[in-house]
Length: 290
Image 1 (tube, rainbow, N blue to C red):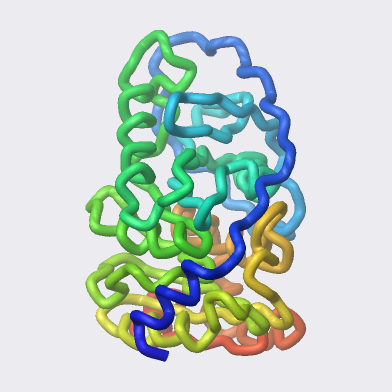
Image 2 (cartoon, rainbow, N blue to C red):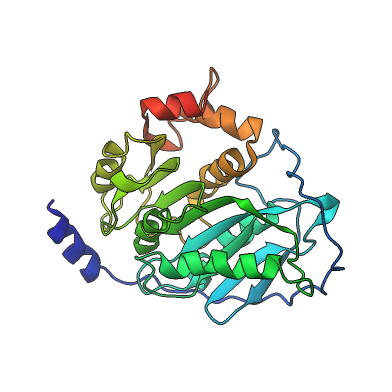
């Protein structure tokens, strides 16, 4: 289908309903003493679809909702970052459980509150916000944000936003989930995991596969979730959750167990036909994940 027709189809699609959510009170500020940079310990025996060990706190800012571990800086850790973009008409509440899930695994998630995240601007501003807090001695985020490990992620229009946010050189990895068409995937330079839904009638899997096919300039993979429709990745992330979390572990923490799911001789996802109806990796991805 021509790109213009794809855009019209998306515009006519029903909006994602934002579910009810509760904001968890922020934890008391941690001491402002400098915290040495340290990578989170590799967790190679994780089921990434299950909740992580951290209690989660949600902080609200005027234009962003930040999901984070309550114990920022525990064990002298700096926390890798995910900047998030919502689907058309949606807010972070529509993805609340998924974003909490990532925070429970130790990531700081800056979710843009915009209902139109396509250009990625407010997503990138979330990274600016975290950078400011990371440099403010009175902030609980002070020296606890790992600005050297950042992923741009989003769903539908926000998936296109993630691709557009990758123009920011601070972004290290990209996770477009059922991404809309208003992006230039061929211009992205960071490793990218494209996720599609086999039964998606809004962002058809062939469209996402087309984005993957023009991504030969960098490591890229295409994962089509078996039986999934367009809103299957909302809420708690559904069948998308585990693989998306493993991608964050691999690209932001260099976790050996997560890496082995995407490449190498064992390559867990390569044989997971229960989860995936299609799985493709380009030549640069094969070298990247070996």
